[in-house]
Length: 248
Figure 1 (cartoon, rainbow, N blue to C red):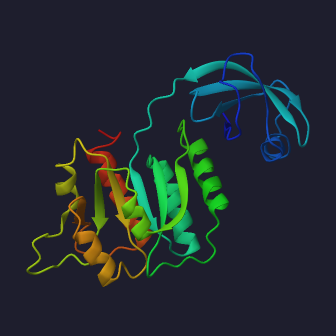
Figure 2: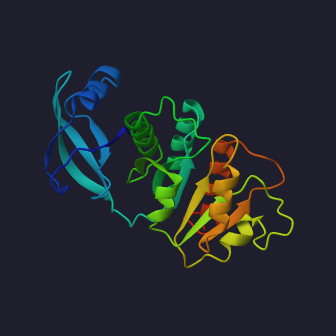
């Protein structure tokens, strides 16, 4: 069954509620999917669970739904936070899509000294996350926050710990030795953590020193190979969900 995310403000979903879709969703249902009056689709808004709805009116740019019944209740969102430096458009969009599929709760885009900020369109990234949520049976869409400088992110943290993907995993004489991510995750069962992934080329020396000087930062590695930013983000989220998240 087709699933659509309703992003516009609406009254709380109840059976019988009449709901007008926006022009893009209306055109998708009627022109692309060839749906008409009487057909049913699934909808969600991130607050009121999953619902089925019947198409009550159908035009090329205007579709009205009538909600029929609730199929799933809304659970509490508990996905991890992903803080990722801006990289090239294609791998960044891939991260957004796969992070949504992997249950991330929030994505904070970061500006670092080695960021590649060209062609970053926030609305497109939000649409990619929305489509991934629709396809994967999620009942919410992760929040994607506008880019901020790394220093601003660190100054306004709303998590207890940062899992810092340190691409340089050899620090002789450093009292804060980089540890495997799974080892660190086993110690964080009661803490809200963010996964921090750097840009192409990694964080520079000043940024690394700033991160490693903080007590709430846990430098981690993802094995003996240097990973691309998109591979690192997906790998870290997978391990997080397996150790602490909804894969348990």
